[in-house]
Amino acid sequence: MKGKRTTRQRLQVLEAVRARNDHPTADQIYLDARRADGKISRGTVYRNLAELAAQGEITHARIPGADRYDLRQDQHYHLYCTRCGQVVDAPIAYRPEDDAAVEQATGFQITRHRLVFEGLCPACAAANHHKPAPREELSDHTNHEGGITHAPEQVCRHPDGEEPSRSL
Ligand SMILES: [Zn+2]
Ligand SMILES: [Zn+2]
Image (tube, rainbow, N blue to C red; front, side):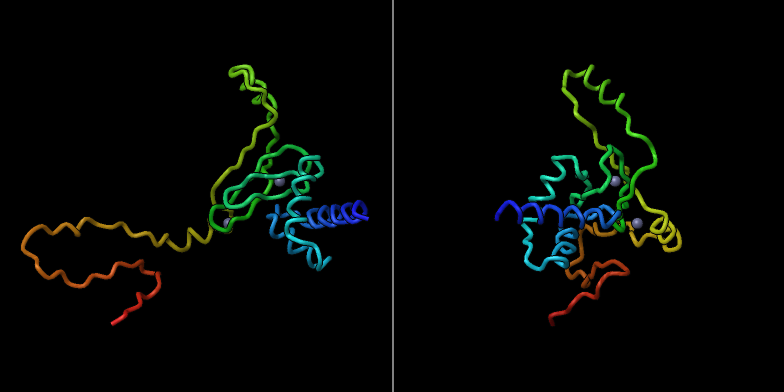
C-alpha cells in the first residue's frame, strides 16, 4: 500500500507546516512531523516539502541561512532579522509590474521575483541600542618597525570573547 502511505505522509508534512506561522526550516518541520509519527524519515519530509511547494500547496522561501517554508500560498516578501534569524511577512504587496518590466527589458520569461528585507527586528534593534556593539577598531599600533627583538606577548581578543586558553 505504498500509495496510501505516501498520501498519509504528505498530509502529515502539510499539517506540520500549517501548524506554525513562523516560516520554519525543513529541519523544524521534520522535528514536528517526527513528533507526530516517530517513523517518518528526514528524506521523506524533505521530499514532501519540495513536492508540496512545487504544487503550490505551500511556499518555499529562500532566506539566508536556511530555506524556509511558508503556509501562505500567495507571493509575498519577507523580512529577515540578521541577528536572531526570525522571518516575518513584509506588509507590502507583491509587485507583478516589476516582473513585466524586467521581462520586457531583458527577454527573460519571468515567473516571479523574491525579495528579502534584511536588518534587525524591533527586539534586536532595542537590544542593540542598549548595548553598544562590541566591535573594537583594531588601531594601527601593530606596525612597530625596527628595534624590537622581543615583542611582549600579545593576546588579541574581543572584550566579551572567551578567555584564551593557555597551554603553558
Ligand atoms: Zn531579531
Ligand atoms: Zn511568508
